[in-house]
Image 1 (tube, rainbow, N blue to C red):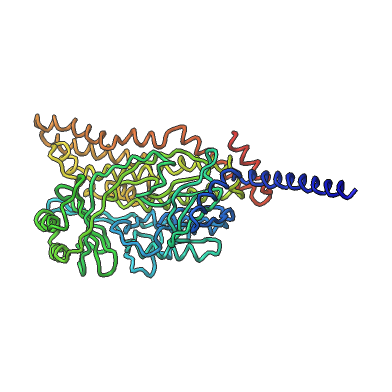
Image 2 (cartoon, rainbow, N blue to C red):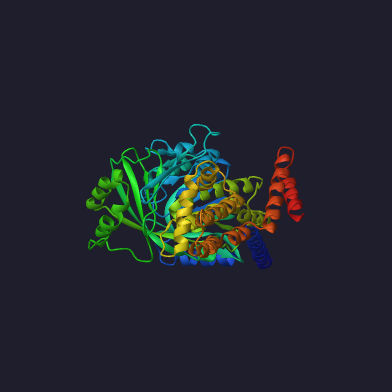
Length: 545
């Protein structure tokens, strides 16, 4: 009798254990993390004895990188109540020679995100426009800011100071956790990104999970290959200098010198410092170590800068603190991946001549914030995936305009032995010098205040027609008549502008983005009266339509 009782007790215990294992397995699968995958990850992480693992499922969003895009995004999503986990490779103050000029359109996005105080207490300088120099002539192009508050303008600053302010602002929220570490890989399961693996500064390895992982790890991203088709082009390099106690011809303006072989930029980054960026086209720059660079700057570049800047420029060269950086361009070519998104320079780059990178990044953040706001639960994978796909469409008007303008202006402003290119360069300078709508239109595009693709196309062809008119009036010669059609063809082929813009914001994309915006309006109308479940049903109906 006792033996049968013991046998019954053992059998009952085994059945209970099997049932318990089944319940645990179902719960893990419901969370989207398979038992097999979790075991394999844990095995890798703990095999060397010095690694650990952590369950980061408490986070709603993981952000890789805490630069301008990552920090601004962390604060924005955190302010909306999301639990955000940010991993940044290096939390010390960055020291870069670009990312120092924020256009007025970007500043408006800062205001919209509540981050405008990040340009305070860093000795940032207001920028009210540009001065353009060519062959001893110059013209001033002022931002069209009359209808905005007096605080609205461009801002220039030390990039590192700005980023540190944004990091501090984001971590002021209790639901934003910023951690130093290096992300080694994304965790993928059945085609869905579930999180990432990262290594801390002391070498320990961890895993973190979240329904959405956003990669913002900069232009040298090692994670972008699985999320997009990266075609990185390096048309030139920037050589950076800091001019001290230099008084620019136009205070609180950026200065662009149309030099040979390519443009030179000057703009203030503090009350006592002016940044100089010399563009060097090609894949190679003169050596700094053996003095080739200093010789190039003093013999080729210095004679082309305005007289007011000449002495400070030569003094900066002689001081020897010369730095270089590759100018990278990469079109946005994403592979829509459930559970993951690319943003910032990891996703899209353009030539930094126009200073539009931060404006595009901040505009993307506003688009993403507005898309995600109706979603109470990011674990609703199908709906989240549709929203993320819509992001790529909704960002295009602003991003494509600024990207195309940057590439085209670099081509036009660079010197060329081709006569048609020379005429186009001169026509562009003269067109902007006309003032009125001829300057306010292009400068509104450049500043991000009016980033409309159609406006960009109109001004590009207006410059071409103006250039042809200059050639044919008052008396056309056979040579000028021959150059005229070539000038038009040069304008069309520069970045294949019309086709680039049509493909970037086509009719079908427009209709789909209209549907998403309509969906957002409907959801907001029902936000107060609807339960989370009914909201999701409404979202499903909107998308099915």
